[in-house]
Amino acid sequence: MIRNEVFSCFVFYAVLLVIKMYIIAIITGQVRLRKKAFANPEDALRHGGLQFHREDPYVERCRRAHNNDMENIFPFLFLGAVYCLTGPSLSVARLHFLIFFLCRVLHSIAYLFALQAPTRSVVYSVAQIPCVSMAVQILMTVAAYA
Image (cartoon, rainbow, N blue to C red; front, side, top):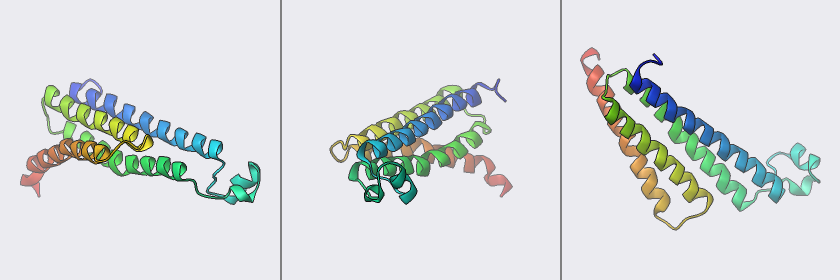
């Protein structure tokens, strides 16, 4: 499988996306520590007391960015893997994967830095185009077997 150029291209972008998700999770944890805003009482006690068992707007922003990644990257991982099995051309597949990856990076930047609307919405929407395209191509490939 790894010798398949399309699949290898997909794996490259998929791993970058997973690393990006880890980075957002680490950022969220670091912001929690810096802002002393802990979701669990035991964590607050460990870092100064129950008064730090609280929410912080920027911690919540980081957490929402991470949740949004999970809501969008996990389906992409499934669609991309199955899409590779449909035999797409490398250049078209690479374009799908690259657009999604770049848009997700831009989406995280827009989320974390609270960029002016509609920046985040636009990059979110553009990232959905390759996902819809892959889903349609998968369905067209397997429709005869349904």
